[in-house]
Length: 185
Picture 1 (cartoon, rainbow, N blue to C red):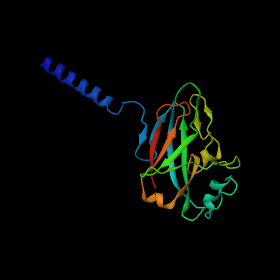
Picture 2 (picture 1 turned 120 degrees about the horizontal axis):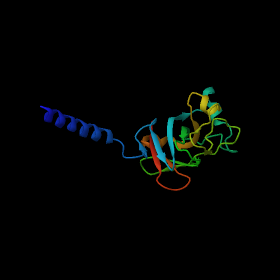
Picture 3 (picture 1 turned 45 degrees about the vertical axis):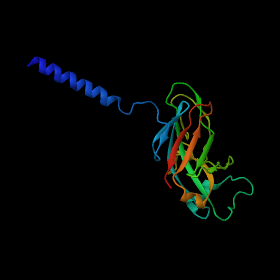
Picture 4 (picture 1 turned 180 degrees about the vertical axis):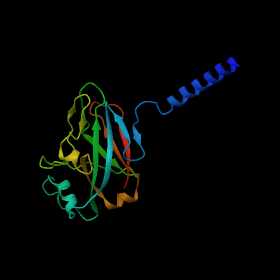
Protein backbone atom coordinates (compact mmCIF):
# COMPACT_ATOMS: atom_id res chain seq x y z
CA UNK A 1 0.00 0.00 0.00
CA UNK A 2 2.73 2.60 0.81
CA UNK A 3 4.36 1.86 -2.55
CA UNK A 4 1.08 2.58 -4.32
CA UNK A 5 0.77 5.96 -2.50
CA UNK A 6 4.35 6.80 -3.41
CA UNK A 7 3.70 5.96 -7.07
CA UNK A 8 0.45 7.96 -7.08
CA UNK A 9 2.20 10.93 -5.47
CA UNK A 10 5.04 10.74 -8.00
CA UNK A 11 2.59 10.66 -10.92
CA UNK A 12 0.68 13.62 -9.46
CA UNK A 13 3.90 15.63 -9.04
CA UNK A 14 5.00 14.88 -12.60
CA UNK A 15 1.56 15.87 -13.93
CA UNK A 16 1.60 19.10 -11.90
CA UNK A 17 5.08 19.99 -13.15
CA UNK A 18 4.04 19.27 -16.74
CA UNK A 19 0.91 21.43 -16.46
CA UNK A 20 2.85 24.23 -14.77
CA UNK A 21 5.21 24.32 -17.74
CA UNK A 22 2.32 24.77 -20.20
CA UNK A 23 2.28 28.26 -21.60
CA UNK A 24 5.60 29.20 -20.09
CA UNK A 25 7.56 29.24 -23.33
CA UNK A 26 8.74 32.75 -22.58
CA UNK A 27 7.43 36.16 -23.53
CA UNK A 28 4.51 36.40 -25.96
CA UNK A 29 5.34 38.29 -29.15
CA UNK A 30 1.99 37.92 -30.96
CA UNK A 31 -1.56 38.46 -29.73
CA UNK A 32 -4.63 37.38 -31.67
CA UNK A 33 -6.65 40.11 -29.97
CA UNK A 34 -6.33 43.30 -27.97
CA UNK A 35 -5.76 43.25 -24.22
CA UNK A 36 -3.00 40.63 -24.35
CA UNK A 37 0.48 41.65 -23.21
CA UNK A 38 3.14 41.25 -25.90
CA UNK A 39 6.83 41.67 -25.24
CA UNK A 40 9.39 43.26 -27.49
CA UNK A 41 12.77 44.43 -26.33
CA UNK A 42 12.62 44.55 -22.55
CA UNK A 43 9.11 46.00 -22.27
CA UNK A 44 5.56 44.63 -22.33
CA UNK A 45 2.96 46.36 -24.50
CA UNK A 46 -0.81 46.12 -24.29
CA UNK A 47 -3.29 47.47 -26.81
CA UNK A 48 -6.10 48.72 -24.59
CA UNK A 49 -8.45 49.41 -27.48
CA UNK A 50 -8.37 50.38 -31.14
CA UNK A 51 -11.15 52.13 -33.00
CA UNK A 52 -12.14 54.51 -35.75
CA UNK A 53 -12.12 58.16 -34.68
CA UNK A 54 -14.60 60.74 -35.93
CA UNK A 55 -13.49 64.38 -36.05
CA UNK A 56 -17.16 65.47 -35.93
CA UNK A 57 -17.78 63.55 -32.70
CA UNK A 58 -17.35 65.67 -29.57
CA UNK A 59 -15.83 62.68 -27.72
CA UNK A 60 -13.12 62.20 -30.37
CA UNK A 61 -12.07 65.83 -30.96
CA UNK A 62 -9.40 65.85 -28.26
CA UNK A 63 -7.78 62.78 -29.80
CA UNK A 64 -7.24 64.71 -33.03
CA UNK A 65 -5.59 67.80 -31.55
CA UNK A 66 -2.07 68.61 -32.73
CA UNK A 67 -2.35 67.20 -36.25
CA UNK A 68 0.31 68.36 -38.71
CA UNK A 69 -0.59 71.37 -40.87
CA UNK A 70 -2.92 70.37 -43.68
CA UNK A 71 -3.68 66.95 -42.19
CA UNK A 72 -6.89 67.84 -40.34
CA UNK A 73 -9.09 67.24 -43.39
CA UNK A 74 -9.12 63.67 -44.59
CA UNK A 75 -9.27 62.84 -48.29
CA UNK A 76 -12.37 60.96 -49.43
CA UNK A 77 -12.09 57.29 -48.55
CA UNK A 78 -9.72 57.84 -45.59
CA UNK A 79 -10.49 57.45 -41.88
CA UNK A 80 -8.76 58.20 -38.60
CA UNK A 81 -7.92 55.08 -36.63
CA UNK A 82 -6.62 55.20 -33.07
CA UNK A 83 -4.63 52.55 -31.22
CA UNK A 84 -4.41 53.13 -27.47
CA UNK A 85 -1.33 51.52 -25.92
CA UNK A 86 0.07 50.89 -22.46
CA UNK A 87 3.71 49.99 -21.85
CA UNK A 88 5.15 48.25 -18.80
CA UNK A 89 8.76 47.94 -17.66
CA UNK A 90 8.74 44.82 -15.52
CA UNK A 91 12.50 44.89 -15.02
CA UNK A 92 14.65 46.73 -12.50
CA UNK A 93 16.58 48.64 -15.20
CA UNK A 94 15.60 51.61 -17.38
CA UNK A 95 14.56 50.82 -20.98
CA UNK A 96 13.33 53.03 -23.84
CA UNK A 97 9.77 52.53 -25.08
CA UNK A 98 9.14 51.81 -28.76
CA UNK A 99 8.66 54.70 -31.14
CA UNK A 100 8.08 52.69 -34.33
CA UNK A 101 4.65 51.27 -35.10
CA UNK A 102 3.01 50.17 -38.32
CA UNK A 103 -0.37 48.68 -39.21
CA UNK A 104 -0.60 46.11 -42.02
CA UNK A 105 -3.66 44.66 -43.65
CA UNK A 106 -3.85 41.14 -45.09
CA UNK A 107 -2.70 42.36 -48.52
CA UNK A 108 0.53 43.69 -46.99
CA UNK A 109 -0.40 47.36 -47.36
CA UNK A 110 1.27 49.37 -44.58
CA UNK A 111 0.01 52.39 -42.68
CA UNK A 112 2.33 54.66 -40.70
CA UNK A 113 1.37 56.71 -37.63
CA UNK A 114 0.47 60.37 -37.99
CA UNK A 115 2.62 62.49 -35.67
CA UNK A 116 0.76 64.53 -33.07
CA UNK A 117 2.01 67.79 -31.59
CA UNK A 118 2.71 68.42 -27.93
CA UNK A 119 -0.72 70.04 -27.52
CA UNK A 120 -2.27 66.55 -27.71
CA UNK A 121 -2.23 65.23 -24.13
CA UNK A 122 -3.74 61.90 -25.25
CA UNK A 123 -0.84 61.03 -27.59
CA UNK A 124 1.57 58.19 -26.94
CA UNK A 125 4.97 59.62 -26.06
CA UNK A 126 7.87 57.16 -25.94
CA UNK A 127 10.09 57.69 -22.92
CA UNK A 128 12.83 55.82 -21.13
CA UNK A 129 10.97 53.92 -18.44
CA UNK A 130 12.63 53.28 -15.10
CA UNK A 131 12.26 49.83 -13.61
CA UNK A 132 8.64 49.23 -12.63
CA UNK A 133 7.32 52.30 -14.52
CA UNK A 134 4.61 52.35 -17.16
CA UNK A 135 3.17 54.51 -19.92
CA UNK A 136 1.03 56.51 -19.97
CA UNK A 137 2.41 57.94 -16.77
CA UNK A 138 0.15 57.69 -13.71
CA UNK A 139 -1.87 60.87 -13.28
CA UNK A 140 -1.61 61.85 -16.97
CA UNK A 141 -4.73 62.55 -19.02
CA UNK A 142 -3.94 59.63 -21.33
CA UNK A 143 -3.74 57.28 -18.34
CA UNK A 144 -6.87 58.56 -16.60
CA UNK A 145 -9.18 58.76 -19.62
CA UNK A 146 -11.54 55.96 -20.60
CA UNK A 147 -9.00 54.29 -22.88
CA UNK A 148 -6.19 54.26 -20.28
CA UNK A 149 -3.65 54.22 -23.10
CA UNK A 150 -1.53 56.59 -25.14
CA UNK A 151 -2.91 57.28 -28.63
CA UNK A 152 -1.01 56.19 -31.72
CA UNK A 153 -2.99 57.74 -34.59
CA UNK A 154 -3.22 56.34 -38.13
CA UNK A 155 -4.90 57.47 -41.35
CA UNK A 156 -6.31 54.37 -43.02
CA UNK A 157 -8.26 53.91 -46.27
CA UNK A 158 -11.81 52.73 -45.58
CA UNK A 159 -11.19 49.88 -48.05
CA UNK A 160 -8.50 48.43 -45.74
CA UNK A 161 -11.20 47.30 -43.31
CA UNK A 162 -12.19 44.70 -45.91
CA UNK A 163 -8.68 43.22 -45.58
CA UNK A 164 -8.82 42.27 -41.92
CA UNK A 165 -7.40 41.50 -39.53
CA UNK A 166 -5.35 44.65 -39.30
CA UNK A 167 -2.10 43.88 -37.52
CA UNK A 168 -0.13 46.34 -35.41
CA UNK A 169 3.63 45.79 -35.39
CA UNK A 170 5.72 47.21 -32.56
CA UNK A 171 9.45 47.53 -33.26
CA UNK A 172 11.76 47.60 -30.24
CA UNK A 173 14.06 50.65 -30.17
CA UNK A 174 17.19 48.56 -29.57
CA UNK A 175 16.48 46.03 -32.31
CA UNK A 176 15.40 42.45 -31.84
CA UNK A 177 12.15 40.61 -32.36
CA UNK A 178 9.07 42.69 -33.15
CA UNK A 179 5.73 42.16 -31.45
CA UNK A 180 2.39 42.05 -33.27
CA UNK A 181 -1.24 42.42 -32.23
CA UNK A 182 -4.32 41.67 -34.33
CA UNK A 183 -6.59 44.69 -33.91
CA UNK A 184 -10.32 44.45 -33.26
CA UNK A 185 -12.03 46.44 -35.97
